[in-house]
Length: 194
Ligand code: ITT
Image (cartoon, rainbow, N blue to C red; front, side, top):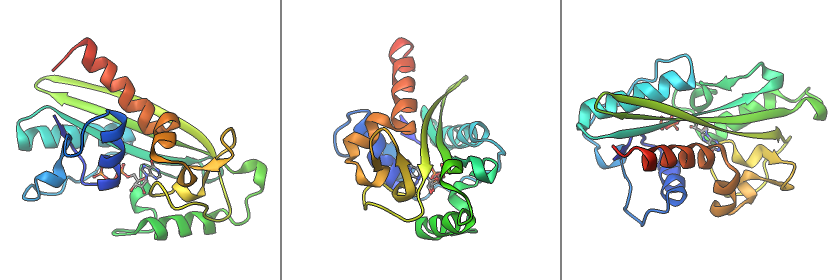
């Protein structure tokens, strides 16, 4: 199976979620010659399917894709499907997080709820399926911790008393949107292999 992503942070997490050995997960990082996939969809489901279909077309192999968005209630669900480009094309994780904190400066504590939503799509021959995993949390006013990636340093989990960036990889995977979604997809594949 090919994981249709070039995000090395996602690959590292997914490898551990699926308990695969080092080098045991092939991704588009292993196919540098293939062109970038345009994420033209308006929903996470659309973009996950676009990535899985296109990688399947390019490689001929069964493909899985992950599309993830941070939905902030006070921003009416933004950045959502635009999470990777919130601060513009080519934005870094730090640029996006800084823009998020600025946009939320005037938002009171009780209104800072947000969630990560991760959609994982499968494309194998004619077969197309997708599953979802969610994680609820609160956006802090400043970054805490240096683990994880993306918006993790400002995403606080009240039940854990930590941000995702203050968790170990195992702790994050046990509670995360991506952990839930990939475990669901692994169950589907165990019931009905490709
Ligand atoms: P691929 O499309 O190649 O998979 P990407 O980084 O563009 O890589 P997405 O389109 O799913 O992936 O963008 C989601 C963005 O949301 C990502 O760039 C991060 O900024 C953020 N993100 C995704 N998962 C996250 C996580 O577990 N924790 C924190 N931020 C995350």
